Image (cartoon, rainbow, N blue to C red):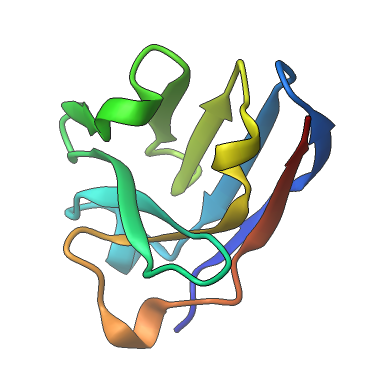
Length: 114
């Protein structure tokens, strides 16, 4: 089962995007969910997570700009990204935390132009 992120696109610096990721109830209900990203030429990195009971944590560089949320009724996790910067350009993925190999999907491309 792969988790497929959606909602990426091209946006100017300072703009916003909202990413979504739907999962099966089996995966979603008891797990901490997370967003990760991989910029060109770099390793994939963790960006943010949300526990089953709603606790969150963020990479320092996105604190105050990104917000993770989850809708347990829809088995969906969201990433609201505001004040986007060119350095946020990457392919964004969702997965559990820690990530499960079989759940990695293709991700969604986010490109921020300066």
